[in-house]
Length: 76
Image (tube, rainbow, N blue to C red):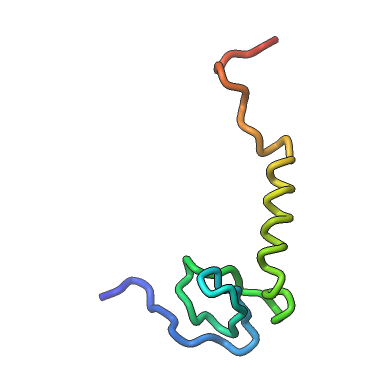
């Protein structure tokens, strides 16, 4: 017996961006590993890749997300 019930039907108003097909879908049609979402609107889902690029750039340039310098020692 599965611990979690797989939801095979989507809810109206839930929008996803399918990474595999490059399309917007209402309700989860493709598997979770192949999609971003849920989004509140079709428009938001259609911009999922742009949103992901912007967030990645923010994280890459945020000093709080950088690892400590290699070498392990304190430089003070």
